[in-house]
Amino acid sequence: MSTQAVVQTGGKQYLVVAGDVIDVEFIAGEIGADVTLSPILMIQDDAGLTVAAGDLTGASIRGRILRHDRARKIVVFKKKRRKNYRRTQGHRQSFTRLQIVEIIRG
Image 1 (cartoon, rainbow, N blue to C red):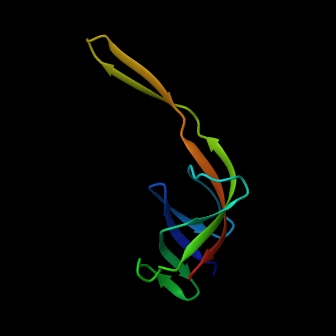
Image 2 (cartoon, rainbow, N blue to C red):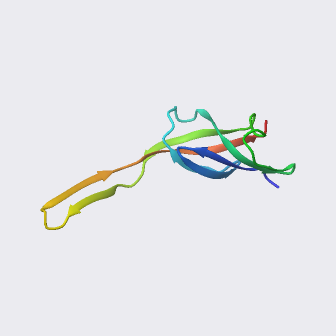
Image 3 (cartoon, helix red, strand yellow):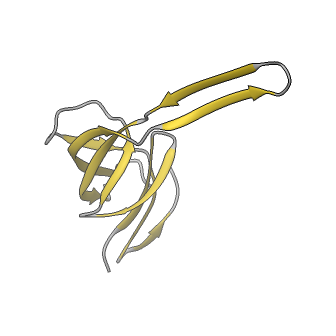
């Protein structure tokens, strides 16, 4: 059984396994650099399931930055009927593509 972990980064939670490629909120760093993700919320491996902040104090996930990019544009449109009020605005969210290198139980 491969080691799985739940990590929280950028206000979102991700279930990861070593070798996974995930898109997370922008993390500053050079392409090819290693980053450490924390906090780890859960780890499941051959030893069992561990769910608790106190039990996972030494745990970490090492990931490698593959690229920085921006997501597709979304259109934000506000309107108030009968008031001639219309506002259009676009937004592109920055993200970082990470490859999960290893999960360290600690």
